[in-house]
Length: 424
Image (cartoon, rainbow, N blue to C red; front, side, top):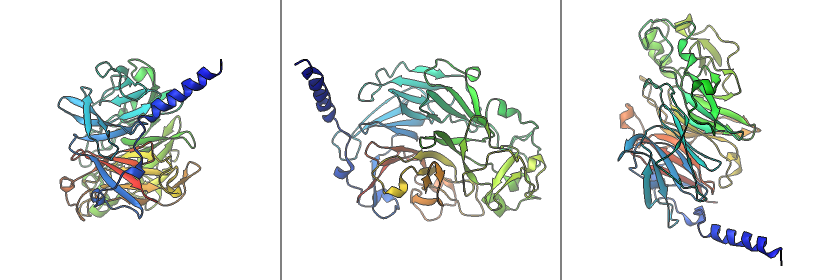
């Protein structure tokens, strides 16, 4: 009889858990028009919620609830919790908390992590992954630089107790006079002391700032999308490439070249990585690291030979705002462990067409890209040709994986949340 109690306890616990299972995609139908999206054959899309605010990054719990970080406060709150109580795929209930805007949000080891543009906080979760006290988060990191330009503090956590924070450069190319025609670059670039890279802090620390963390990687102009790849236990990031080659140096670059350079680059980082900003940019056509014109470059000279090489190079100015390695089982095998990238869309590709406003996919094998990138989800802009970013009806910003393997995508124009499912 002594052995019956543990068994009974386990069965009781399983019964309690089964009362609130995550909604299954088999019970969920795509919207008749796939929520306006264009997807590969076999995939469908539905709009989970709309008009919730400027939805940036998102995180989905094991029960299928969705935490959304708002860039700006709505009703004086900056984090939204969406719940689908009846399992139809649509969020019927919504609550909000947090008195700060920002971008970053992540779930890890019983805590919800969220960032403002100056700090990182965390909230204790209960067994349903709901915040136990919304009014009293722990302050994990504080005092991060915010000079408005490239100021979003995206976050990701590893499996060793660390949180990684992007601190974007408050400059385009570290010119003495930022974004000024002909202005030369500062040598060395003083911005890199406190920005233009990824900083690492203890995930369970309190009131940490620069002196308590380490500059894990440098030479990154701005990273909004980042994720931890569990296959090779490494941090991957998407950099927003520099702007204005023609505007700043018209004698060296014509408008078409300026629209098409430099690449939006994916990097695999390690401790001490230097990706070369502002001294170089990556030219995806020459497949070379090119010395920036602010530092003596002419569009052909190579520079920073020791800087990291991108693992993937995308077209210029598409603004990658989220990166997600897919580990679910719903999608076909080709997507397993591959990378999804949400592109917010360009504003500076004239005279070429504006581009982006889509989610791309990169196949991976063994923790490395194994094929060319492709468009996965398109149609967010709501029109074939975007001449001004203000015309785009929706702009992808955040990505998250649901417990059933669904892919969630946020839009910070109308505050929509999309869910991509696959029907065999």
